[in-house]
Length: 206
Ligand code: MN
Image 1 (cartoon, helix red, strand yellow):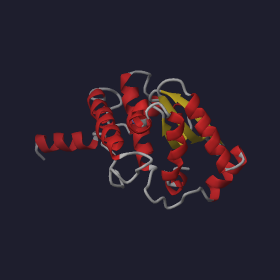
Image 2 (spheres, rainbow, N blue to C red):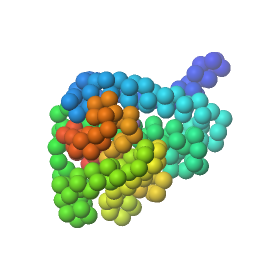
Image 3 (cartoon, rainbow, N blue to C red):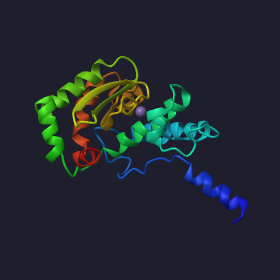
Image 4 (cartoon, protein in one colour):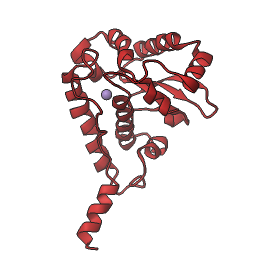
């Protein structure tokens, strides 16, 4: 095998990529506009992906999965970009124009009932967490190693994997996620986001 081909193959294996959106860029309107998708997915996420691919080179994290980097990298610029690639991949893939499930069922539904007293209360608690998060960050629904659900508030690019929990559903409360559509009205954005969550995807992450 030629050196060039080998190098190409290796760099292909180690490259972090943009998630492919399973919907058109205007499919989430009016909850999230095409313009927001074009900036948020097309520019912000693309920048995180590009940065990660540069920063990981010649580090001990080269070739590791995104999850491994996010769980174990020290605080700093590599972690920040890896965190944001993982966060946004989970975020953009949890949406659908026509969700297969517009509410959770089975094991996830049982856990929500047990831990939060039902879906409506979970939504209320997640909205409250999103609206009270100061600055840029994320609110996650996450599951711990014994199957208990938690709502976590994460600063900047953090993710529940840092605390050994699996992220199930994320709300991006960086202003870039909603400012073009809702300006300063974060609460209104967070209220509407439930319309486009596909719970079949959230369930698959349990
Ligand atoms: Mn974002």
